[in-house]
Length: 298
Ligand SMILES: [Zn+2]
Image (cartoon, rainbow, N blue to C red):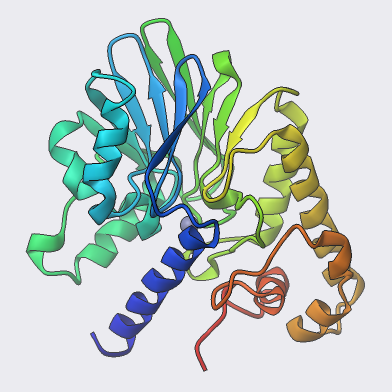
């Protein structure tokens, strides 16, 4: 425990703060298309996708939220949950894995998610371990892709390189124009680049730009946190990331705090800091490679 333990407790609290920023403590289901739903709750947003015979859950929120999460799934479908997919390693997205593991056929994620989870769990009491992804894809670097073909339905799992972490995946349901992005997109706040877990701001910017290039006009985008968005919201986010990047490149001698002060923030007021977690200075810390991407405790 000691320092690492305290840091973990704090990071857990900070990640919960991300969830509460949008004040959605109650579990709530929103239908996006014929076979796609989003479940809002105490952790990260969860996607629910229906194939002819089975359901797929994308992310598992927090351990404590699983009973309510399952109630929400059952309010939509009696189909068994065949696959649980994780968008990345953070505890507000994989926290329910261990509780859900006995009833799913497989947990799927990028290889780096399993590696990082296994490393973190090695320090835990054996009773608190479990829920590691059993099917993984992706190399240490570069892109990776896996398709799930279930009856007539096709789902795409894509890793585009390091962004929010080094194990992000986006989950696409092309037939119904639905895309779940995990924490590569916080709808309504500054992004968090988790540098300690391989996150990369330039990678995030490049990937959001690429996604905007192929996303259909009427796409529904499930962010990691915040309400469901559309292509125009993602384009606004792309423009924001590019403005931040250009500002840092244009002032190579400025420290993160100075960059935060000189950035024209009023023009981007729809991207809000997350109290105690991500500030303008911590964002520029990640952009310039001089900070961890989040606020650090004094
Ligand atoms: Zn995250």
